[in-house]
Length: 310
Ligand code: GH3
Ligand code: MG
Ligand code: MG
Ligand code: MG
Ligand code: MG
Image: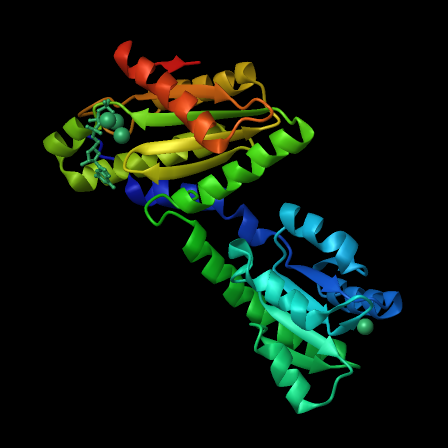
């Protein structure tokens, strides 16, 4: 008698755990030098459930903001002291993580020529001031929905709906920078399923895929909200633990192992994983952190698998 993995249930539970970001309110960054205009726009958006951030001095504030936040849409003034919105849009479009973020110009400028020039930077639409709240919402909402859908496609692993390799490493890079700049604590775990080839060989590739997905659910169920987990490829995953010591990260990974032992998906076989943990020290590069975790993982495999090495 067997109880093969109920893949539909695993998938729906996984999605319910990974869709939290989709439920976040739409977040609009307003870049506008006139405070009164900025707060008018913010209020109109907030009344419809959006969350808003205001930058009135982009030269001083924008780069730091964009290093730490990815808004769903940028509402951009064209004329500001010391800088114009057109140049700014060009700069924003050069940042890979902002590629799918819509840019909406909002200005008094009525010359078609100038508007087209501004749009060529990669903006999405040009609205003229004053704008009525309903027109603003209309312009903003559908673009945000599309932007989020695109960002999902670009950042998620289609099999597990965890972060994909690119997004996982991008987020690790952010945390490594935080560790360098501010001395933040940071731990990572490289995790790999044991003898996975046997599962594929004995039960078929489709069952292997289900195990990969099942394990994603096991991790998602036991990791904390701030932990970042992604699938690097195959049956290998990376967990990034911001603001976390090695001891605590180890405890979290041990919880995943316990949970997996209690929730094996298929009576025909038992599957386990090995993990390698490493700490990022201030000044350490991303490659070095991964190399340390990889070496620890190698030792875990050598020590017989189904264990975690720090
Ligand atoms: P070890 O304990 O040393 O990690 O042994 P292993 O068998 O898990 O490691 P190995 O790297 O030899 O095999 C990994 C296998 O994972 C080989 C590959 O065919 C399979 N694989 C990689 N990606 C996928 C996938 O997306 N789906 C399935 N079903 N299998 C995959
Ligand atoms: Mg202005
Ligand atoms: Mg291997
Ligand atoms: Mg393996
Ligand atoms: Mg592997």
